[in-house]
Length: 514
Image 1: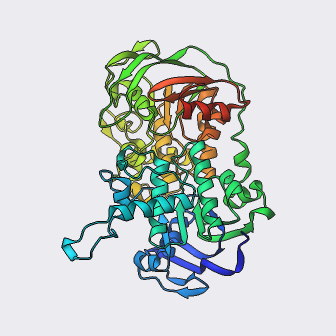
Image 2: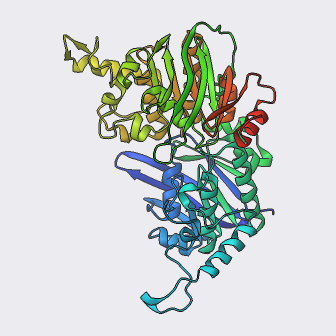
Image 3: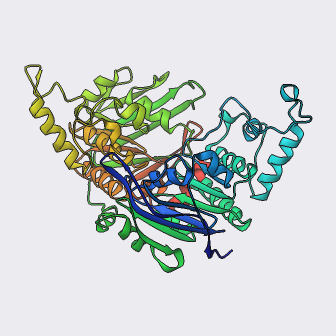
C-alpha cells in the first residue's frame, strides 16, 4: 500500500519541550502518513522518548502541536490518545504474568453474557473468538490459554499489539520492538507488521538498528539533539546516509569492522561440566564446558531464556553451581565470592544496568569509581581524597565519551546509553584479565556502540579475554573470534567462520543444535 502523503495519521509540528534547563525537543516535526511504516531513529538523548510521550499525551509540549488525522490536537493524556485510536507497545510489556494470554487480552474490557453489573459473567467464548480472529487477521499464532509467564517474549509482543487492535487502535507506536528478539522472531514480527500495514494500520517504530529500518520502513525520520535533521522515503536514501545524520562523526561506525591482527595465548577462563539448577523458573544449566583464552573474544548466542543469563551469572559469582567448576587463570573460583573474583581479575558488565550495574540513588562519580574508592590514588592510608576521586571519575568518563552535566549529578540523569558507557568505564579501569559483557550495547546509540566495540577489541588485542553474551547476531559475528550457541541450558554448537554464520547460528538457536 502506498502511503498518502497528504493524509497524516500522526505527526508533530515544531514541538518544543524543556525540563528545567534541559531542552529535550527543540523543534521536532514529523509526518506519518496513513498506511505506512515510519521509523524514527537517533542517538540516546536525541529526544525520541520525549517525542513519543507527547504523541501519547503523557507530556504536553511547551510549543508546537501534535497532529492526528490531519488536525492539530492538544492531548490531555494517554486515554485521549487511545480515543483517537493511537496505542503504544512499550519495551516493558503491560501484561499480568499470572494471568493467561486471553485474560490479559480482555482485562478491563471483558465481554459479558449479560450486563448485570457486579453479577455479570464474562463471555469467554466470545473473548476467545475475538482473540483468534484478530490473531488470524495479522498472521499470528497464539495459544490464548497459556499463562503469560511461560510465553516467549515475541508472543507477548504480539499479544500487546492485538490488545491495541481490539481496542480499535489503527495507529501503533512501537518502542525498540526487536530489542530482546532473536533473528527468527524479528522476521516473524516484521511479517506481522507488514500484514498490519496491508490491513490499513499505520505504524511508527523507534529503532537503533539501521538494517531493520532499511528492511521494514517506508519512511525514516532522524532526530539529533532534539531536532529533526533528516526525513526521507527509504527508496530514496541509503543506510550510510541515515547513519551520517544520526551521528556527528559517521566514520566512527566504520571502526566496528573486525581487524584480526591479534594473537591468542593462555587459557584465562575454563568451565568444566558446569551444572546449575533452575531458580524461580530460570533455565537450568546442563554440563557446560568451554575455554576463553588471552587475546580472544568468545561470543555466546541464544534465544532469550535459554540459559545465557544464568551462565554469565554463574561465572560472575551471582548464581551458585551444583556441579562442575569455574577456573580463572588456572585457579578454581567456583566457591569464591564476587569480590574475590573481581580481585582475581574478573570484570562484569551486567545486562541489567538499572538494578545490577548501577547504584540508582548515587551520583555519577560514585558509580564510576565504585570498587576503586579504597585504592590509590583515590585513597591513601585508607582515607579517600575528594580531589583525586573527582579527577579519576572525570578521567574515566572522558575515556568512554560519557555525556553528563556534573559528576555530582545523580546517575539517573544520564541517558540509558551513557549509563552503559559509565559501567564500561568503571569495569575496565582496573585492567581485568577477563571481561564478561552481557548485552553491552543494549539501548546504546551508534557512537556509543562504536566506542564499546573499539574498547572490547582493544582489550582483546592487549591480551585480555572476553566472553560476550549478546542477542545482536551482527554484533556477535562482527566481534567474536568464535561463537558458542546455547539452547535449553546446553551448548549446542560452535561457529568459527563468518561465512554463513548468521544462518548457522540462527538455526542452532531455534532448533537446539546443528
